[in-house]
Image 1 (cartoon, rainbow, N blue to C red):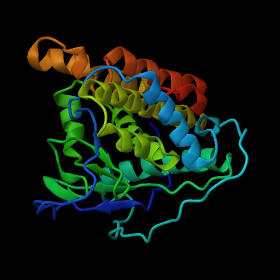
Image 2 (image 1 turned 180 degrees about the vertical axis):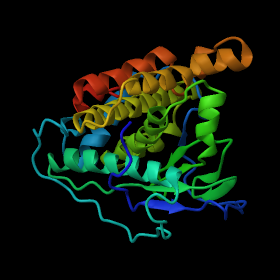
Image 3 (image 1 turned 135 degrees about the vertical axis):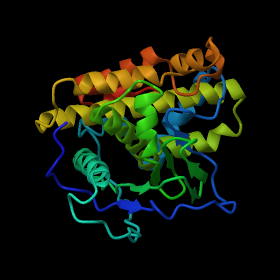
Image 4 (image 1 turned 45 degrees about the vertical axis):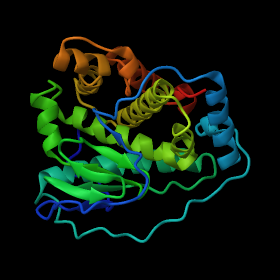
Length: 301
């Protein structure tokens, strides 16, 4: 991936070197880690899906799946919170920070354009880099939890050591595989802004375990599809290199629920899946990449 020398996002909070233990942070417990998630179970009913669609439409006043078509009327604006970024080193002094900041900037450019097409304002998430562990309103963030998005503060938490784990433990190396991970978490932020995650969070307490898990799978696959849209945008900017899409698809395959369970316990239990199978994750990333259209990412309805 061609990323060096490009604009870096300022929405990076670098906590590396000062990570500590959480003292019991409170707040919503909803978090969407990758690749691991809290196990839930099987299939949500049609009524739940209808509630999701109606909830999103009510919260935005539009059909959120029309974001790219421009077929919407009216609009809304999300307020920018004061920045709490820590000072960032100069470009070139920290290659890892440069890499994630550039990739975050590319997601900002994409989703700003998408939202503007529907007369909306995109407010980007913050990315928190840490090592060891750190606190978040969604609980303790650590290398063990993997990267996750916390809706309570609209931040993505990432211990860069996960990239080593992705390469060495899951067999999914490459810079574009790493970028895919970040684009997936940004996809959850998009879901937060358009009302998909808040609706899930509202309904999940009333769902049976298997229903909640099936709903979670739909949420995760949509984030994969959004990551595919980002990959198409990167390609249109002439930033892709040979093998990049294969790296992302391989990462999606290696962190599918069935592949992870077979690797760790020798067999898969579909009713416990929370992120989707390897085939599903590859399919939905590919769908976003091939179409570049949010309408193609309707895993909920």
